[in-house]
Image (cartoon, rainbow, N blue to C red):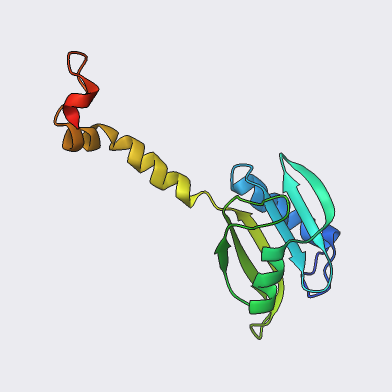
Amino acid sequence: MDQYIISASSTSDDLLPMVMALHHLLGGLPVTARSRDVPGLRVEDKKVLDDRYTGPVLEAAIQGNELKKTVPRSGPYRGVPVVVAPVRDGTGTAIGAIGVVDITGIFDLATLMEHQSAILQQVCGKDPCPLPTESVAAKR
């Protein structure tokens, strides 16, 4: 029987089953992980793209032993919101980190689009804005 142990020195092979499970649970969102002492992996599109992966946010989550929600300035996820959580041992020490692309901002955009008609009515007074018979300048 296979046994996987997550520790500060876990390898990509040790982390792979957990990372793939998260990747599938999250509908195929990119997932990254590493242990404290060994680079880990990056999974996208049901494939391991890098089995010696590390990233600045994974490292910061381990170092600070705290959740990180940020937009990386470097690496393959540069400019993309990510959320990274430390993996802790029984004493609360960070022994690794797992990260995913942060899609929570998309829900805000979806809500905005859902309310677009109401927003246009508040701004313009009528929907569509401007009405086909109205000049754009008439609304300013």
